[in-house]
Length: 243
Image (cartoon, rainbow, N blue to C red):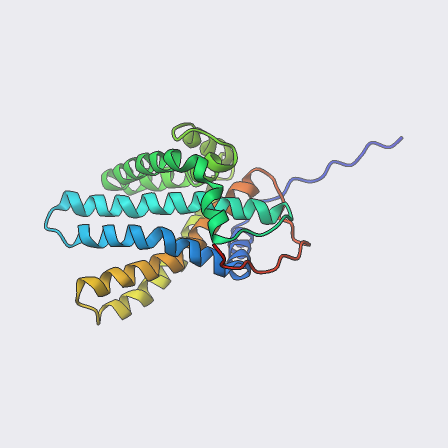
């Protein structure tokens, strides 16, 4: 009897992750944007008010709120990606918000620690900050999918990224450039807005549109690093924005 030929390991590529993130965004735009709106309306109002103060501490807290919201939102989105990859049903906005309810406290704790670690690394020297951003790229998915603790998720993310660090860094850079492009368009619009309410609304809109892509990149990275292939042949209808 001939020995079975082992299935070759999937090779992580920058283009593969980015294209998969775009595909999922287009297919599930309604529920992704709807859920982002719920999360970033709250975060955007808090961030906007804090940034208008004269206190640099409160302004820094505003940035922290934004990052925590992003980590929390990524926790929601990874459930949708897992669902699609398994070829199962789609999520509604309400179901997506409830999907990571068991991990909200851990996601918030992880977001705070992530902000402090990466922030210090970027402040002291750019390279350490970028290194931490790379090895901690999939902490939120690890918390939701594998039910890791807020601190344990850092080690798990490093374990998954190890060996593919440069590719993961490449994914982060490309995703960042895409998001910067979107932010630049928003800045052009925002240049004509001088009042606080207008600035807050613009921040909410920008975060709502950009957050799904960033969260999808992190989620796709997580499953790719675990060696799980996407359900490419599964035809999934676009999700409805029902709550």
